[in-house]
Length: 362
Length: 258
Ligand SMILES: Nc1ncnc2c1ncn2[C@@H]1O[C@H](COP(=O)(O)OP(=O)(O)OP(=O)(O)O)[C@@H](O)[C@H]1O
Ligand SMILES: [Mg+2]
Image (cartoon, rainbow over all chains, first blue to last red; front, top):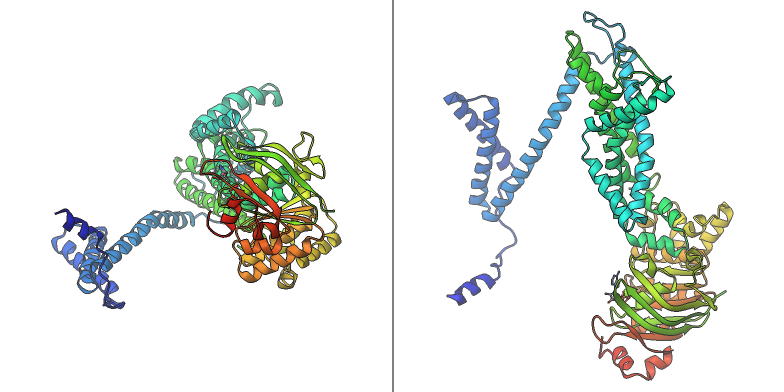
């Protein structure tokens, strides 16, 4: 008994007699796909049990089964499994991309209606419910200023903090910082808004404002900073850790001081990754509504001064317009959403281009 | 400009692990000294403690005294960057800076230590690349990335980078282990030339190489795994390879051990 089992286990796989094997012709897979869809359509519409979605789903299943059977018959088991798994992986990719395509399509098709010059030149000031005009200029200004200030605050702070943790931090203090950064990652945006409301708007802002508390775009920037900081610290930290130690040692061996090594060798090497992390943080902050509503208050008029009075932002604008009773409001909401996505996309592309290891390839 | 390096009772630890113990050895100026011995016996550890690269690792420390022309390298008031500028190092695997061009790689040590003048940098780069036998291969693409060179070229680039700052001692940790025979020969030639100006200490697993390039040879060994490495024998290369005074050395170089 035992001997047969062991010999069965240890026997090497049979050597193929020839390296060439029979293959399904190139047209087989598309042909099976068409046949599967046709069959599925016949079944679904013949028995009247569903619509086009069911046809596609059933067709996909029939395609997988048919592909496996055909490949199994002609090419053998291993190849049949290979084909089925590749088909499954491709379907997973399609499933993952479908929602994205659908979102982009919805945004573009619905946002196109008000994507006009008027939308980008006017605010909602004095726009009544019957007025088809009105725009998001004030919201765009708000988003740019709030996210801009938040970026100015968090990028230096976050990158320096990550450098401290990776390059200098040893012992309890660095551990504590890492721990609190982790905790900060989990702070809900509404809580960061409340924090800034309680601290900045109610306590600090009266000093600058004749004793009265004041909403401001800057307060929104602070709330967004609380959200962006942990993302930037963590992603920068990961990127810095990826820089190989021999690179640092190579610089030390030339007598280059540690801080200069970090500044001129380590950070530039990690830069593309750091920029990606920063852009993720910016994209998240640009989409936040609750903190802006809490501490900048929103507003219909253009306010270019981020330090005084109410300011709106694109995401807040979307929220307000989507809930507005006017029949012209939904179109404005869609266009603002499209603008927000386009803005983040443009910023991301610009940042990637800048961070590309300048004139050196790759 | 070359200097004498001398170690007395050098013991190095990685955390609680003692990697080398009581190393005593003096390297004369303008010579090539080879460190040989079985894997894990602490050659790299000793080499890295000479330019204070050992202490870069968390928990690593060195005891005993290391001097360069009678100045204590580990003295409290010593600036570690000055030590490393005086004692350059070439690593086993080439490590050019990936974000820098060939030219920037070569002058990195000068530039990041405050040399700005373009003419000085140009001159230093050409001189270092010529000494490293690399100039002809790269002179037309100095602006291209250093990481785009072949392995052997990258290693010579790293050597050029090291000698561009004109150190007085050059440490090389198996600099040829990833190289083809022709690049190896080029680097050995280079060592002969550099010997005029620098003191060179090289770790190698290649006995022929040690015999070819070095004036003096130090043989390190360990009793068994987990023991600290010790210096077994240190003598003229000729003596070590023809008539070693310790049996263990003979066994090692004739291939009976290690
Ligand atoms: N970073 C480290 N942390 C802990 N122990 C280490 C570290 N580096 C080396 N060691 C240990 O120190 C001892 C000496 O290592 P070292 O690298 O100096 O050997 P070596 O002689 O250079 O070997 P090789 O010829 O393989 O390069 C070994 O036992 C090794 O396991
Ligand atoms: Mg070694």
